[in-house]
Length: 149
Image 1 (cartoon, rainbow, N blue to C red):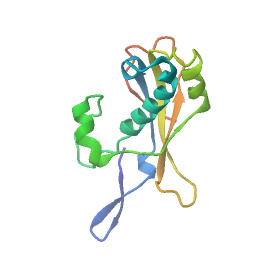
Image 2 (cartoon, helix red, strand yellow; image 1 turned 30 degrees about the vertical axis):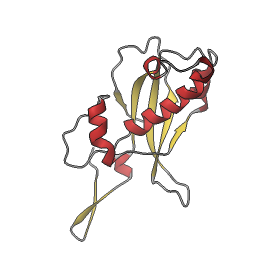
Image 3 (cartoon, rainbow, N blue to C red; image 1 turned 45 degrees about the vertical axis):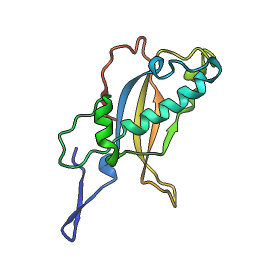
């Protein structure tokens, strides 16, 4: 996938169309909610999913061989090329998080994060991330997959 756009006055302009992508991730909620009191677990899980989606949808520089991984050192390097900060959750994902109650959040959740174009007028960003729940029997050990939509 090429992210090159039009060439204007010696500079290449990035195209938002080339940055539209969808990936499936497994989020390990158990480690993110460790030590959180019972009555705050599901609300914190929603915040953690949004934070994960913000970090996961990183737009890499054009000439970079940096791999996307869950390693904290890699995320630290990529902060200057942060992805979309506008993250929207699907209502079904919200129901999946809350289905076992406020304190019974699942250990792992499989999600599909899609970066989409923002067609609203006066939008601060050209792209937003849309997070959906994916139904799998056991999300443990599944790799990150790029999804063709």
